Length: 488
Image (cartoon, rainbow, N blue to C red; front, side, top):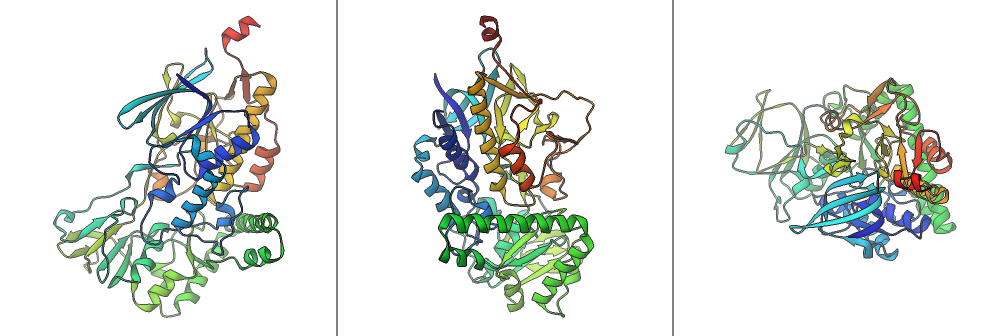
C-alpha cells in the first residue's frame, strides 16, 4: 500500500498553498494531493457564471509567498484560476496531484500512528496511508447547492439555473432575467448579465450591505513602479489587512455610525430619488453578515442605466411567464437565476473514524480554528469570514509545518489537541447570521470561550499565535504509539 507523510485533500487555493508551504518548510516530507475533480482551482474552476470574481482584494486573497502583480485587485475567476495553476506548475506541485480521486473515508489507527484513506477513482477504490491529513476541501458541497423550491415552478416555460451549475450554452442575450438573491453572487451576476440581457431584476427578500470599491488598487500599482515586486506586495498586503481590521473593529464598536456611512455611500451612488431605504438598508448590523463588494460601482451603474433593477419582495409562486410576488406584482422572466446560496459542509463530507469510532465534527471543539478536539494528526483550512480566506489558510499551513517539524525534532509521531476542561462553555464555530451559516450550525464544530479553543477573526492576532506561538502549549499532546512506548 502506498504511503505518504502528508495527504492533502483538495487542489484549490488552500490545497496548492498547503503543498507549497510543505515543500518549503518540510522539504523531506512526501505528500500527495487527492482532488475529486479534473482540474486545479477548486472554487475558481467550479464556478463559471457570468462575472465570477473575487469578493476580496487579491493582495490578501493571494498567497503571501507569491505576489499578485496584475493591475486589477478585484480579479475575475479565470485570472485567479491561472494564478493558482501557475503557482502549482512553477513549484512542481502539479506532479503530486491525483485528479478524479474523491476521498470517501479516513480512518486513524493509534497503534500504527497512521491514517488510512479510501478514495474513489473513476469507480475504482484507491487506498493510501498517511501520517498526517490536511483537509483543504473548502467549506461547501460541490455536488449540492442551497436551492429552495417554489410553488408553480414546474409550469414555468423559461429556464431556471443555479450559479453553481451554470450551463455553458446559456443564451441570455435580449432575454428578461430575474436573479433571486442579494448576496455576493447576485450582485456579481446582475451587472454582467445586464450588459446584453433585455433587463435583469435582482429579486431579494431583504437587503444586503453593498460597498463599492475601485477594481484596481492605485497604491499597489504605484508601489510596483518604484519598489521590488515582493516589497510592494508586502506593503500593499499589510495596508489592506490593517484597513480590514480597522473597519471590522469600527463596525463592532460603532455599528450605527458604520451603517449610516455605508448607506450614505450607496445613496451618493444612486442619487436622492432612489429608494435606498427599501432596497439597500439591511435590518442587521454591518459584519453580522459578509459585506458584498461591488468593483467600480458596476451594480450601481447598471441600475442607473435602467438595464437592471432591484425588487424587494417575497415570491408567492411562479407563473408560466415569470414570478408573482406576495405584493401582487408580476415579474416577467425568460430566465430565472437562483443565487440562493451554498450548502455548507465540513471536512469535505469525508467520513472520519478514530480507532474505529466515527467522529461527529459537530460534537468537537476547534483547536486554533484548524484542528478538532481529540482527533490526532489532522488539520483543516478554513478562512476568515471578515477578511480574505487565504490569510488564515496560509497561517494554518505554516502552523501545520511547524507542528510536523516539532514532532520530528522530538521523535514524536502523534499530535492531538486534547480537551481537558469538559465544563468549558461552547459557542457556534461561526458567529454569523447569514442564512448559509445558520442552516449549517448543526453540522459545524463548536468553539470554546477561551484560547486555544476560541476562534480569532483577527489576522494580526493569529499571526502571532500561529507563526510565533508555542507548539507545545499544554493543550496539544504529543505521543507515540503504545508499541513504541513499550519498546522504549
